Amino acid sequence: MRIVFLILFLISNIFAIAIDKNWYEGTNENLEKLYQEQIKKADSLKANVAQEEKEQLDYQLLLLKKLSNFIKQDNQFTLKEVTQIEDLDDYIKKIKEYLKTEIDFSNKKTEFEETNKKIEILDEQISKLTEKESFTTINSQLLYAYYILKNKENRQILDEYAKFQENFKKKLLTSLEILKISTKEDLTTKLTKLQNSFEQILKDEKRLLLALDKAQISENQSKITSLGNDITQLKNEKSKVIENIIYTKIEELLPSLKDKKSKYFDYSKNLQEFVESSNEDYTSLIELLKYLSREHLGVTKTTFADTKESFLDILKYTWQEINNPIIPIGEGISILAITKFLLIFIIGFSIATFYRKKISNGTVHYLKNTTIATRTMLANLGYYFLVAITFVFGLKSVGIDLSSLTILVGALSVGIGFGLQNIVSNFISGIILIFEKSIQVGHIIEIGTGLRGKVTQINMRSSVITTFDNIDIIIPNSTLIQNNVINLTFSDDIRRLNVPFGVAYGSNIDEVIKTILDSLRNSDLIYLRNLPEKAAKVRMTAMSASSIDFELLVWISENPDENGVGSSNMSDFLIFIYKTLQENNIEIPFPQMDVHLKRS
Image (cartoon, rainbow, N blue to C red):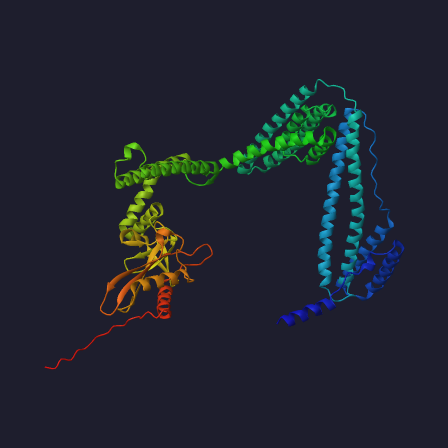
């Protein structure tokens, strides 16, 4: 199947139409000649084609004429050089010119990107065509050529804009050194009047929007039209006031920028805040001011001011975010509330743990004469009481009303009454196992049914025991709490292995013991060798009917070491004893019975 798809893909590529670069590559004279020849060819075909094809030819002629006119016109794009800036008013005027040019620059970028997208779409469409000489194919090729030539021109214009704007910024920068600034004491008064006008416009805007809502509800069309015109006029007036305020603020901050005073950053911050609140796009202006301050005042000073401002903004934003509700409980729980809950819980849990250890150790003078059982009871009661108090304070810190928990308790009691006793019993048993730690993950246990294995999981409802046959047994937690459990590794994982064996009557007992112990020390069996108090021993246990019975006592570890190597098992030691006795010609007895016949 893949081969069929591959063949179809290759065939489609063979017959696909490629982009004909002859329509846009070459000198203007050759391109003009090509376009004129195609115009004549299209004109000659118009008389002998159907109406639909005639429309295609008309469109082709239109594209050819556009291409012909395009290569004939002078596409050289230049911008006027920036004149010398002398005073403050002229400087403000030049800033406005810079921003206007920046808007034209941005529009040209957008046009360039949109044309590129059209070129990509046309490229894909042409690749799907198969008839090279069809009107559709030729028209697509001509349109592709027009976009290519258009974007070639746009690329030159963008490069010219980029150079011009860079030089413009440098001109504004160098002019700061020689700029003549006359102090205008009326700037503060002017700004106050403009701010008052702006606030009045905002009030009028709200009033008109409310009136428009009423008119729309009452479906008064003439009123809607009238109010719409008033709102549009007010928005235009608002934009002019915003512009006046912004450039007045620039006029206010320029002296500080020229004289390299730190007060400039306060003016700049005030301007940025107003621009953000006005919802007008003055991004290019803010970027220009950042460039001028960075180059004129120095990178270090500007960066420090920006960093300080950014740090404060980050702190404000972070504080706002961590106080925003993220969990819809009550009035909502925020990240800060969760953090407070965790801190309270950690501190309370640490205090409870410290209390239990202190009481359990019994080192305090007034607890020395108490029994272990009494100390354990006091330690556990105090521990769970402190944990409960911590939990209550933690819930209060996140704003959860504890009285609402009574509903949950009531629902649970009803559920228990309808048959959830076993689930709740196992759940509580799981909590007890987790906190009591009498059975932990990694312990080797044996329960009353004779099941032995390693605890691999302790969950809230059940625990998992993996037997030595690698079988996972899931046991309800209540079984581990209510029944007798033998924990072979509660205090540690070391236990003694009793290996029974027997020899025939008449054997030298001392020689048997010495032979077994010497051979054991020289063997490869894995057991605890380096602990004097847990040294291997051989002891005689019985004189039975057919043999003298002994036990080899060795200490082994129930869990593998860090390399994954475990101790030898019962089978390994029995095989070792059997081979050792055979190699040393010590007789291994078997049951015997002597029958004596008595003649009567």
